[in-house]
Length: 125
Image 1 (cartoon, one colour):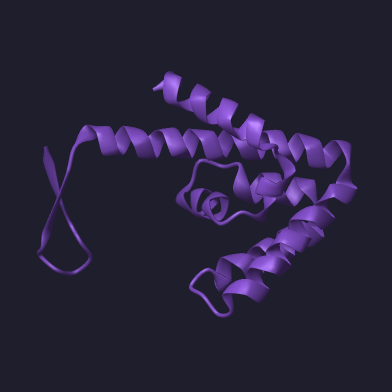
Image 2 (cartoon, helix red, strand yellow):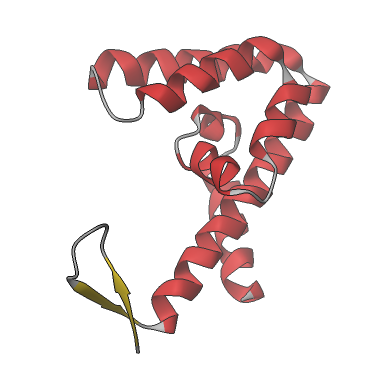
């Protein structure tokens, strides 16, 4: 078991390796899913409108949130197309991971595909 500290406070937060492995699995799943989605967007660029619609629904339902700055960035990326999405979202950096975690592109994969990819990510770790 390890200790990490929350923000500025010296309040320790305990975690074990299982929680880290779970996060790595989620990161791998999101990365794989976004690579698949980018391929689909290249094959059919008109599908970007589905993601734009999803983003608009989220904004209408949620109002102002902490995710707005990322949703604004997603709006720009969707307007720029698959190449821009791949450059910003499929990287290994922290910002790409954050964008994947608030991505409107999830509407472009089926529930069956989502479960299969998550299962694969879990088995890979």
